[in-house]
Image (cartoon, rainbow, N blue to C red):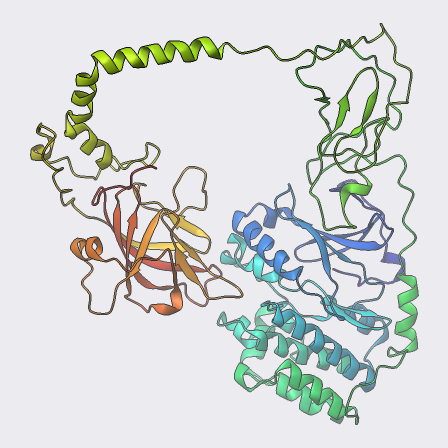
Length: 630
């Protein structure tokens, strides 16, 4: 969010390419724009102002960004701290992804320093302590901010607010970053970000040290200039802290340590702020900001929510129902058809935009059917010439609006449903069965005894028509295809030839199906079976699992052969990745009779923005008896 302009530029008029409504939120002004999108002012149904960020098209066109964005926003919605702006609504699947946060009436730290200069020491200590408390909550939710900078810290009357936490991680995964686009602001990056190595909560602590120096000095600690120059100084040179007040020197110096392990934790940062303030506990005066900065807060107070009549049309970037006129003309009701049940529901034709958390979102602005009030899931029911309210929850509604024109709608009394001619059918079936039992018993025995070859071929086909058989599967043994008299047991499944797929990069939340040729990662579960998948869990241990069969983690020294995988019985459907190391082997047996040996080769490099594991896959198709459908 950018609130960085002067008072005159805080609430900017919407321009021609700006949307007017987003999923039911009426946009009233443009607040600014940043590296990832534009920010608009809107209101909840109760009149509370909210800030809505709409992601730029170049990011929204990247499928991996959308997936990461959705994941990060869901995590951010769990962050509820005193010094964070809560995320209250979002949509990662619409034409343009967006999220809504509480609107904070206050300038950003960047705007305050640019307009009023350096801040006094007491203000800086309260600022840093508040940001550190926000980071405690953010890190506690498993999120690293990655883009903590002065424009992402807003100065409210009761303390700072940290915004946009975690969103930069979604951009890290896009194809844009691989083409040279830098995510994050170089001036406030940590050395490990500049070097493309491991990101951790200590990364945010380094940024917090830079924020403290910036607030106290009025300039960045590593100077300004080209991105490459600034990043070089961050990695190889010491910060310029000339003029930094002594009360802040230890705090800033420790936070700006090149080695992440040498930086203080956020709890230690709070303790350092308390020690520097000369108090055992920071005390927040009512007026913690300088008078000139505090005056900017009143200029950023959002006006009361505008009137909502007539309701605005629901338009881009999310698809919604077309606008309805406030008072549509009266329409005639055609004669009712004979009912097949006591009540016939009248379908509601209004599409509903994405439903946000209670108290927010499109419900206040969505158009309603004339004369019926708010649409309900069940719709009104037709019980005669009068439309009565819904049978489900919600207020009852009666059609007492415009007079009905045209011929009088006569509704005949409901007729009982016609009796089905089941009696005759059942009788005929019984006669046929009795005749068949008397004359065709021998035929039944012959058919059921019959040729076992077809049953054997059916099982070898995989047990499921949609589970495709690969062209690489070996031809059936001619000996197994010879006829038998049905009394001998089925011949054992022949050993198929293995098919190898080397260096398969399986991304987070992707899976493979052994029936595919070649075996390849996919994240679509509509046309393939999830035989083996990998999940990079944010809050719990990473895991691999299967939805179609059984897994066995082989012990060190066990030979990964077809015979081993056939004979192993230590089955599970989920294995935590911490349980195996590089070179570990997993046997996978699917219910369709396919078997695979999966060899773990390693994870994505730390510098790679994507999360994936690399595996080798050896497949024996139709290697075991498929499970029989129950």
